[in-house]
Length: 366
Image 1 (cartoon, rainbow, N blue to C red):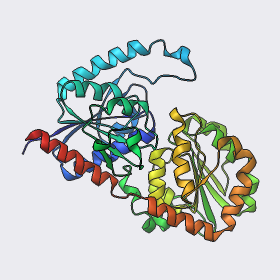
Image 2 (image 1 turned 120 degrees about the vertical axis):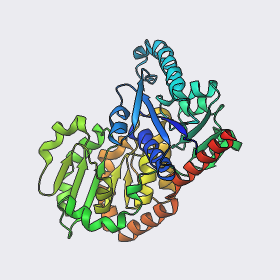
Image 3 (image 1 turned 180 degrees about the horizontal axis):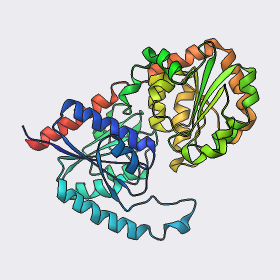
Image 4 (image 1 turned 30 degrees about the vertical axis):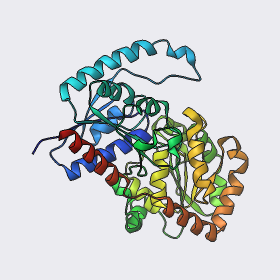
């Protein structure tokens, strides 16, 4: 049987990396002989996370356009040219049967070159408003997996596959891990647990918000697990106490979500897909510092369906206390939120995406 070669490219944030890893793991599960190589941006977190997951990665010299700091874009034309050359030689080395892009500027050069060289390309778009990279690559793509309806406004309708976003398999059955999660984090099972995550890199605004609410958590009898991000850990480590745990990064997300009763999170598309499957009462604080304001748009979809509370970062300091008090006090609202999240969940997204990719490869091989 022929060994199929895959190149998967995407990165910059966990929202692009973890879906890529989920797809790679599912490919390996159904075809252990598959050869999978990643391409990412030098210096970005994929260069660390992908090898940790057991895959080889090549880094290219590319960076996104800085909209808020245009003076930092002077090297962009040179970086783009070099990254295209690097991508060409990577393509020559592996001659992939298909290239899979999960978004972010890191995927642009590799999938562009692959398309030019005649390889079939497949895109996975996590957001309700697609990033510029995937919009540019869509013309040559053979299929585009999306997680939200009405994406024909941005992509050719005939290429769209409504699949949902890939999620880590470890999160698919967390209900059975409740006891292990409480034990793992040494939590009091008689108290409610509030989990705070600010994205894979952390979030200064959320950290500052939580730091000012210690008395509130005590009043509400909550214990808190707070992932503040590696770059912020030293600033907030002093908040560690019997009832508040401050972590730079948490690897065991299945145990974390299993132990949670209420979750506060950013609204990246990958996070929302995972949180829909986790189905715990949810407060979303979208980052205002992302391209096309897509986190706010993602959060709005959930809020309109009663699946989450949307709290704008600009209003968080003013509204946080009343919002949390109201949610903690209303068991009915918590249950309705859990039900709404469950209806939005797409637990078989990764499996469905890989099935489509395999059909694409087999049609190419014929």
